[in-house]
Image (cartoon, rainbow, N blue to C red; front, side):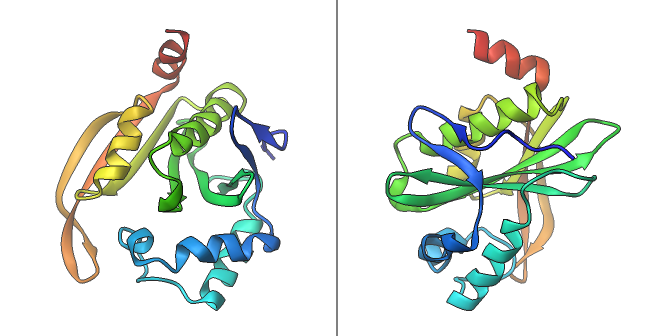
Amino acid sequence: MFQPTYPIRTARLTLRPVTTDDLDDVYAYQRRPDVMRWMLGGGPRTREQSRASVAAMAGEDALRAEGDCLTLAVVTGTGVIGTVELVWRSRADRTAELGYVFHPEHGGRGLATEAATALLDWGFDEFGLHRVYGRCHGRNEASARLMTRLGMRQEAHHVASYLFRGEWADQLVFAVLAREWRSRNRE
């Protein structure tokens, strides 16, 4: 089993496992159409759907086997403002996928970058990942900008590659290798 030493602290944030007590904060952004716009599985969530989401995320506190997801609440003095996650995609290839969701009221201050950087630091330095990639809808400019700020390079633009709400959609794929991550952070 692999998990960070909790909590992970940055200059402005605390990253820790999601708990059922986080329901109100998570529901505050999961009920928003602008947050759920790019997510698979429908539109804004009801409180009960958010309760089920929080319950699922609360069990994602460690990586035990390929396919597991490590989801961490991103906390400020005002509460949970979002989540960051690593999905363990391959033990043999030492690969994971980065994911994140943030309340838009906390955007524009570098908090998502700070949180994702802390999780990637753990993934590369402690968990021993070789490569981390992220994917987003081809029109999700905010997500693409975040991955670029993290130092991830765009590796692919898959045209009309998946069904998204009944229509074919483009998908962008970004990635960073451990050696690139370490080199970036030494500069």
